[in-house]
Image (cartoon, rainbow, N blue to C red; front, side, top):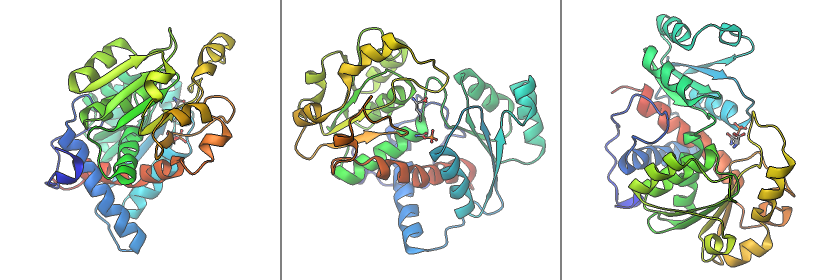
Length: 315
Ligand code: CP
Ligand code: NVA
């Protein structure tokens, strides 16, 4: 079933968004249908206070522009409030455990915690120990909120998801992992094109391959030929040191006009942002009419509002 033939039920069975591994295509479609409705309400200036009185705590151990601003304004637009908790300022940064932090936040009636951190296991521990919904706002392994906004963007640009060829170039990182899971589950053909040594995690790749078509290749031509969407991300993720060897290995995977020329005529260029022009992508591509990077950034707001409503709203 494709996204627009899915009949939304207005609920999902999950309490958390941790990694998308246990989310079905229907769960993803639920989010995207509600996200489109919330987007229209927002554009028309229609009140949509579905989370009135709810509180989202946002724990950040890494920097952010999009995630922070879209969650904070998102919950506000839904009638709730956000608490920004930099790990430098809370006791977590001085060694208080995740479990104790979760138990304390539970006592204050917090409804949801969005966390951006390093270890995926910390996100999972927070969910296990707290009495609230946990949303993964990026770890070293996954970036599920980004993938939902990306899939939403592709549904808007192409009118369907099933059968689309999505080609990701570069480091087999957190963004690549979540993209291949979401893409495989929604019936897309996902190519991850990375140089040897920088491929995605084999266990996550295998998990994604159980849900759909995921091909890992080092051939740019194989990945880009006839693609509907080209995607890339930075050479060095947050927490990684610059490394000339890695840079040299990734440079041939840059998305430039030659790569764009191999894709379909109406192919879109995607990037989670922030971007480094001249490294993983050229200006000629990211600033071209093929680029939908700001649509993706905008859809973070709408997709996450839908996630918050479905996880934190009335069941
Ligand atoms: N794409 C993304 O997550 O952006 P930020 O790091 O600015 O939140
Ligand atoms: N892979 C990047 C994504 C940033 C949104 C990082 O983890 O830094």
